[in-house]
Amino acid sequence: MGAKGEALLAQLLGSAAPEVRAIAAIGLGLTGDRRHAPALAALARSPEAGPVARAAAVHALGELGGRFSGGAGGGAGGEALGVDQAMLLALAESSDSQLRQAALLTLARLSSGSGGAGAAGGGELPTGAAEAIAAGAFSADPESRSAAVAAAVALTRKVFPRAQEPLAVPDGMLTLREVLAGLAPDPAPAADRAAALVALAPALRKAAVAAVSTSPERARLVADALLSSASGASGASGASGRGGRQGLAPFLEGDEQLPESEKREVEAAAESIAAAVVMPFVSLVRHPAVEVRTRAVEVLAARAEPQAQAAVIDALGDRDEGVRRAALSALGAVRDKTTVGAVAALVKSSPSWPLRVRAAEALGRLGGAGGDKAVLETLTTAARSDGYALVREAAARALAGADQAAAAPVLRELAQRDPEPSVRKAAGELLKGTP
Image 1 (cartoon, helix red, strand yellow):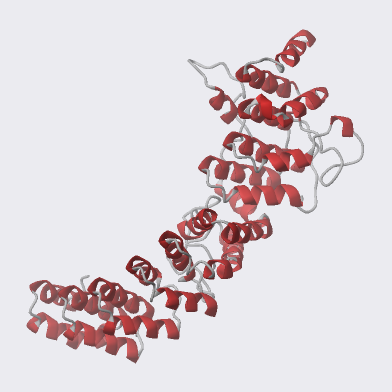
Image 2: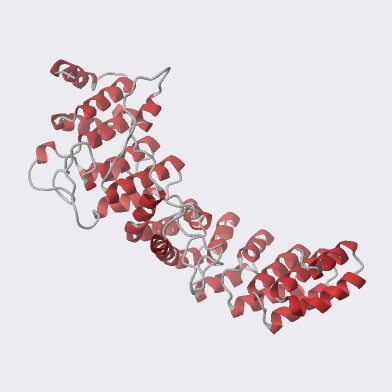
């Protein structure tokens, strides 16, 4: 593009049409000429310009590369053509999704030197950018969460790979949203996402605690991130126990194939984040909203901390039966003696037969292979004498799963004498070793 073309684009930055300003901003960014940085920064700062044009200007600043102007993350010299980091950090908290995404990606590019012409740096991750990206990972907007992962990879790997042309000639109609999306990097492989998760673990811990502590909606997002990956180490802490999957959404969903050494690092990072939010989630077990209490207890049921298990026991007496059922369904990853006792009490005395079914199932999981005597006795009594067939069947299945040898005489008795055909059939199948 010649000087006249650039001059025309600079002039179009002042157009009354936001779409025109946006395209002009992207065009100037793609020139790589940092002399356009002040004009692009001015557009990015201007609320009157509209979110689309501002997002385009922020993306363009990332395309130009360079450094921040003074302050943290900046460097000596070149401040007149630098970018205000504080502006980008503020825009990363914008209510507009496209503006947030642009700010996160440009923060990463300028902080890491992965921008258009930036020089790569080294050392520790810049705190401001890392914390903004970590907060974005728990955004309510899925596209912002995806942008946060892409930004995390750019920040930690110091690369911004993009195979497609940012402004390629389209075959048909092209929307400005598609143009902005085309400025994002290529999807990162699992190994890079894993490395970003590990590197950003301290910032993610801080962001997760803040999210759970300040907003029920954001607490739900943190719970979703933890539970969707069954996060946490599979060791003594018992944070996962659900298939041995590792990770933290949206970085990893837990089923990616990683080398063993990387898997251990990911599990340690995810475990540290899960451990950090235990007490904030404990405080939500008595939240007025049922869905908040439910999600909190689902997270805590997988934690071995005494405070977490005490909160789960508290939830077993929740005024809402749905919360009680959710607590029972989530149990099994951690075998806590007090929790086992509380569940056994429900099997024996809960007036709700659906709750007794869930409690029997949970007790079978908590008993584990060769379940202890109290667990086996409780399940045996329920299988033989509960007044509801579904409870007797659930107890029989749980008993067989906990200790096949101890279950055998009970199953034979049920197969021959239970008044309900479905229970007799289930007991016969369990005796044969079929579920």
